[in-house]
Length: 126
Image (cartoon, rainbow, N blue to C red; front, side, top):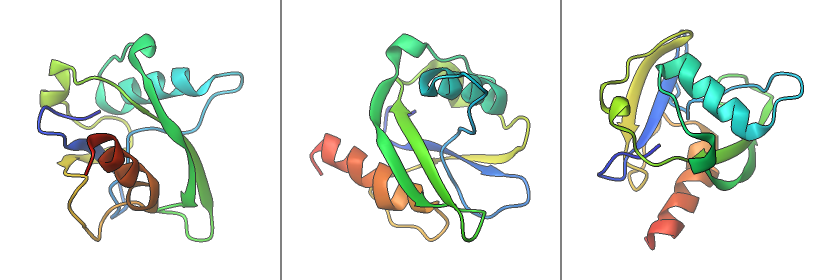
């Protein structure tokens, strides 16, 4: 999710240091879109409309908080919803932050820096 300024909502799980997109592992038989909606609700208390998800891509990168592991993620965009402006961390989430995808930072998950943010910048024509 991006705010009206184009910043991307990122979260940090409790006990970790890297910011990443909200999300998680799918349940048995669950498709990636349903997983995205469920995880966003569990982690931030925000209900997304599965029909408004726009596929950005499926990407593989080193896992941010699990050295030696790779994460493969289906990534979607969803139009901004007003509830996101006042979202609070839930479940295993300790912190949330709106991140400018055009700014380099050292605390972002490789998935963001290697794939997601470049794809968003390309969509934006930057």
